[in-house]
Amino acid sequence: MWYNTEASKLLGIQYPILQGPFGGNLSSVELTAAVSNAGGLGGYGAYTMSPQEIFEADKQIKAATNKPYNLNLWVSDSDYPDDIPAVKFHKAKEIFKPYFDEVGIPLPDKPAKFQSRFENQLEVILKIRPKVFSFMFGVPSADVLEECRKSGIVTVGAATTLDEAIFLENTGVDMIIASGFEAGGHRPSFLDSAESSLTGTFVLLQLIREKVKVPVIAAGGIANGNGVAAALALGASAAQIGTAFLACDESNALPIHKQMLFSDASKYTTLSRAHTGRLGRGLTSRIAKEILGKEASILPFPLQTTFMSPLRKAALDQEKWDMILFWGGQIAPILKHTKATELMHSLIEETTAYFDGLKT
Ligand SMILES: Cc1cc2nc3c(=O)[nH]c(=O)nc-3n(C[C@H](O)[C@H](O)[C@H](O)COP(=O)(O)O)c2cc1C
Image (cartoon, rainbow, N blue to C red; front, side):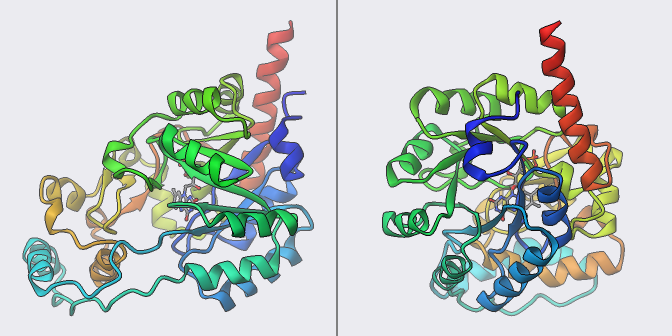
């Protein structure tokens, strides 16, 4: 059967379909559990959470499913550990002032230095021992990966280039996500700049399959059974789906965000650093469009997120939707489902129908 892949075996799931974890408070216990209970692998993005919050969320997931699930962190969660120079902040204020003026709020103070949370979060993961620990923006040390192996935690790293995939394999991760540029959310590049790591899912998948031995999970631009089948046909051991699950009722995205994903606005997506400081794909915002070519004035991640957060809040209150970044991938215009369980059932049925069709 199509679903008996190496990934299904390793992850302990029935169907090799992963719900992509969402960082930034967009994951939910309900969504993670719904996908795991339907035979896939639910994922929970925890990179912005405190160790205590991760612990609590994990307790809730365990109460909602007895199936395997995935907890996700960002290995690198800051591009700038120091205080940002006044000149740099001044430049950012100059470029973004018109937007703050438009919503009638003052420019914020300079964001404070950001302390990485990864090491503390990692301690909780090692205590909790989820069946699966996935990460992006790098790879934990070989010692940590070894500790995961001894504790029975399957490790999954994200690659945006062939070099990153080889690096992940050499460090000792169990599985690799081939993360194509179609995907919604941040580009998780860690060896080269995100701008020079823009390969589509199905090319990247084939390049990685040719050179690495560990199972590969295709992510980016997959939202239905034909997409899952195409990924498997090209050698993927599983497919990871983000945008289509983000649009479901169970995700923690705002109702207006889901509405936008199902609207005509979803035909246009852009990779931009304007809203967070790292390159990510969302529905094209006016700010992302207008800031093109002025990237030097954007603050490093995550200080740009902090800087933009009062603007985002005011724009939401005033329903100025074109000033807000609504995360989403290029596949958004074909989304159909609003219930995660129905989406899972339809993915399974469509993939089965596709492979059954090949036999006749
Ligand atoms: C809003 C949003 C947030 C995301 N956050 C994370 C994250 O924190 N960690 C991670 O590994 N992947 C993250 N991703 C990537 C997804 O898990 C998944 O790989 C990707 O969305 C697949 O591409 P698709 O959107 O075309 O389906 C995020 C994606 C989106 C849309």
